Image (tube, rainbow over all chains, first blue to last red; front, side, top):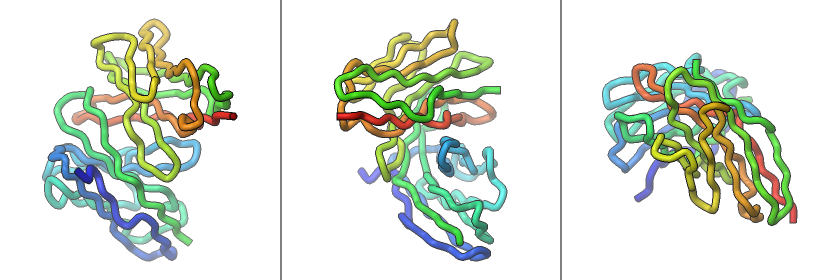
Length: 114
Length: 114
């Protein structure tokens, strides 16, 4: 199994450009998540999708949009990139329903906005 | 509100020495607690989790953690550090706010000296 895959692995954008980060999982998980990781701040939740067809804002949603395309795929879009969005982005998935389910993470996308 | 505090952003130990990474949480309900490890340039992976079955939880790679309700702590330990343990470690609490979400601590980077 591939688990959680993310594309691209690296990206450099200029301020104002747009892009979409792709995420897919092959574990038949209901819930999917997008986080950003910045030094000294741990992981902060951007958006999540508890199940196919639903999406909700997390802790830091401003400047981002998401699409739960189907059960496997959950994309994150930056409409107009800003230098403050320079970060490492992780997608994760988990089975739904109970709190003791851990999350499974992708390898991350390293985004630099100049 | 639920939160996670990891004491010490960096911990350095000698190879063979005890590893102790500290985590305290706040939660208004019995928590689900996790430790994740992140090796360089990789996503997070589960080390261990507390789900109320036992207060002492054993994980992968010789790590274990003890849930202490009276101290609201979930410290991670390993009796003898190995060079391959050098990584960043995240404590996390999973909460139900109309769908389960995970709150991560800021992380502790472990250095292992030869």
